[in-house]
Length: 193
Image (cartoon, rainbow, N blue to C red; front, side):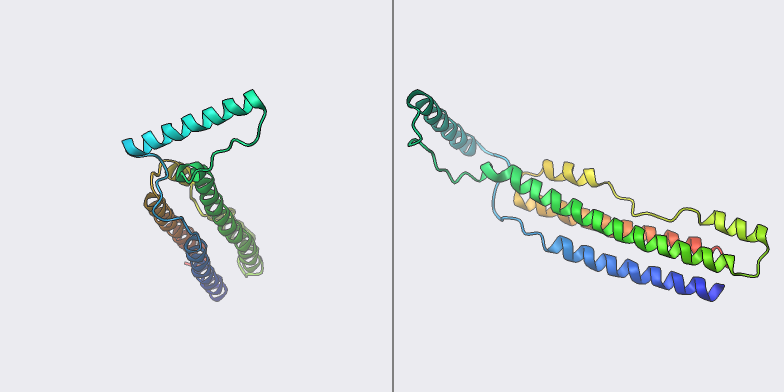
């Protein structure tokens, strides 16, 4: 039994490493437009934004007066796409966290069944088997708050701030994977001590 549990724990350690590699890849594949301000920061930007707002209001009023679509304003103000940039980044990160968690949980469901089978086929008494099964009735999950990341990015002001949020959250996710796998290995080791 000890040998089989050791093999299962080895497979958990390997899964942990593969998941961490995937997380690195997911997060590193996110490209943020550099050098943009995600929120207006100084008086010049505010004046420019106010000016653009007034032009847009004027165009809208002309459009409603004359019903013409000839009046349009083309602007390169980077603030116009901020929400979509932030939403896209948040969506990608949440998607990667869900994929990682789902992959871990599918894997652990199989490992749980393996361990239960090892216990059931052991030479232990029924009461000992029941006791061991009760120790492992739940498996460890990757414990990370996905809404925390949305909040972090929501308060970011520049592309550099967003990069820092992504780096910080990636570290938290990697640590959560380590924690879940370490606790699970300890739990399974307790079966054969």
